[in-house]
Structure formats: C-alpha cells, structure tokens
Image (cartoon, helix red, strand yellow):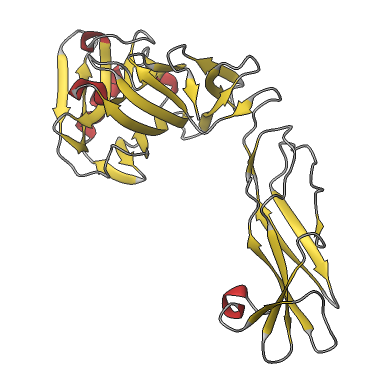
Length: 307
C-alpha cells in the first residue's frame, strides 16, 4: 500500500491503462467532491471529485484517473436521506480497494433551501423563540462586521421582548468591549431594575471577524473559538436571573449593526443538545433559521438577507 504522500514525491505520469509492467498498488481520493453538506431530499453529487489508482513499474509511481470507473456505494443523483453519512468507492485491478468520504446531512425538510448565513443591517434582535431557562449553554456562529457606535456591538442578550430597542429593556448582554474589539464585556440589569455590570479586559481572538461564541451556564464559562476567555463565575451571575427572558442574538442597544449569523446551538442543563438552528429559506422564500431538532422555523423581517 503506497500512500499518496509518498507517491507524489516521485515521478508522476498520467497513464491511460495498466500495462504488463505496471502493477496496481492502491486507490486514493485526490480531491473531495465540492458538495459535502446536504439537506434531506437533495441529490448526491460527485462534481469536483478526483479518484486515482496508483501503479508501479518497480521504479516510478503512475496515476490513472478512475473517477468515472470506481464504483460508488450510493449512485450519483440519489436523493439524500437522514441516515446517510459515508460514501465509498471501490476499484478492482487484481485486488480490490476502497476510499470513502463523509457527508453531513443537515436535516432541512424538502422545500427549504440551505443558506450559509442570514444577515441584518438594522436595529432588531433575532429571537430564537426560547427562554434562558431552557438554554443552559448557547453557542452562536456569528460575524459582527460593523456597528454604528459602541453599544451596537452586542452579540448575545436576554430580554422580556424579542425586539430590544433600548439598553434599559435589555436584561443581560455580552458584547465586544466599547474600547477594544478584542475584549468582551458582560452586563445588564437585574429583575429588580438594579444595574449589574462587569467589565474585563481579558484577551480574546479578534471579534471583528467570524467567531464561535459560547456562553456556558452549566460550567460558568465563556468561550470564543473554543478558548476560555472568562474564568470569573460572577460575571455570569446575571444570566442566572433571566429564566423567563428570550435568548436574543445581536440585540439592539442604542446602536445598529451589520451582522451575519451562521447558526446556533442550544443545550439543556444536562448538557444535551436540544436545538440546532440552520440558516435557510423556507418554502415561501422567507429568510430564517430552521431548528432541525425541534422542527421549528424562526424568522425576523429585519433579518431578510442571506448568503
């Protein structure tokens, strides 16, 4: 078995077929298909895939393109089902080898169109339609591109209304620090109206680019791109008092913003994934998020663009 990493360091020649001096060695997948993520009902595509058989004459290694010859475990054009995960190809020339790759079935129903993100360039929060007492860990994949002022940098929040239009009605928030996009700031108001505010200058990855932001109330942690950035449990105390408040993404706090949302995950107090929100268009063309675990579509008219 000659791995491709070894083969590419010697002479590579295209061959149209194996001769008597060429002995088949192994099968490699040089290039994956261009589409690896599917919705239920999409058609399987091998576009962009390159599979090669490696042959040796005892001195050099030769490649033969067998992309159209190798036999797939699932035929191209087959409708994707929820139980699909791995596609393999077999090739025989004296012996049989196989290569495989993994696909992700994101579980959107037929009629829904997958999008990479949904976007907003205004002043309205995106509500997931659930409350913090159901949401003990929230992970959002987000890109805050710009904000009109410091207060517009909010990434995650909690409030009694799904549409937050002022700081006073926002019970809790987590935002890029007004003075430095590379720090986070957590604050807000308790239920009795008293201000609870904590500000830290802990280092985080730069926030004016796409990041994964995690607020973990189970373990009292905040993480950016899987890196823990806030070890102080007191800074999360405010989120223990907002059980009946909505989980809000990019809520408006006296400043509009340009933001892209690539998805959201929600876990319960036992650490079980309960909601998995995917960007999409519904059958009517409305931009929003579809929860593939809960089976619900949520939208906001201000979040009306996607890409």
